[in-house]
Length: 252
Image (cartoon, rainbow, N blue to C red; front, side):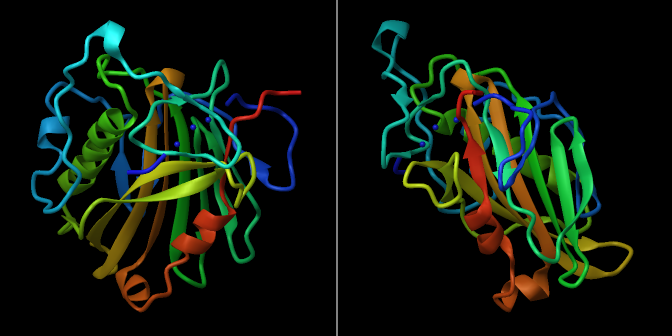
C-alpha cells in the first residue's frame, strides 16, 4: 500500500455537506443489518480466509519504544494504510456534495448517513464512528483496518442471502478536506455480493474503509447497486468517491 490521514465535527456547512460524528451504530446495507463492530484477537490472522490474493498481515514484533512515528499531514502527501494517520486532537468526518439524482434517506443517525438513487436502484451509505485501537503494537493503520473490514464482511456473509466475497481486497483514496485534493488518505476496498430475497435480484456492496487507531476512528462508505449494473460498468462508486472528502481541518 502507499501512503494516508484525518479531524473533528464542525457546525457550519461547506459547499459540500459535513456529516457529524457519533458513536457506534447499526448500518442498513441494502437489506442487511450490520451492528457496531467488535474486533477480537486473531481476526487479522483470519482475514484472508475464503479470499485469495488478499494483503498479508505480519504479526507485530516491535516493542513500544520501537514503534514507527505516526505520519502527519503534509502538502501533496498520500497517507497510506502502511502508516499511522496522525490527525492530532481532531476527529475525521465525511464531507460530500449533494449529487444529482440522490435523495437523503438517513441523516446523522448515530454517525450513519444514507442516500438513495431510485433511477439506478442504488443506496449510498457513509459512516464515521468511534473505535478504540485493538492492536496496540501496530505501527500502521492496516492491521486494525483489515480486522474491522473482515468483521464487516463476516457480518454480511452471516446474513445469508447467498452472500459471497468477490475478487480481492484493493485500495482507493479520498481527498483530505476537499474532494480531489493533493493530500489524500488511502482506504481498503472490498466487494460483497448477495441476493435480495424479496426481489430475487443480485446486489453488489462496494466498500471502502479505514481505521485510524490514533484518532479512535473507523470510517467507511458502501455503495449498494444491482450486480447487473455494476457488471455493465454503470456503478456510481467512482463518481461518488471522487466527490467525497475526509474532513480533518481544525474548527475555526
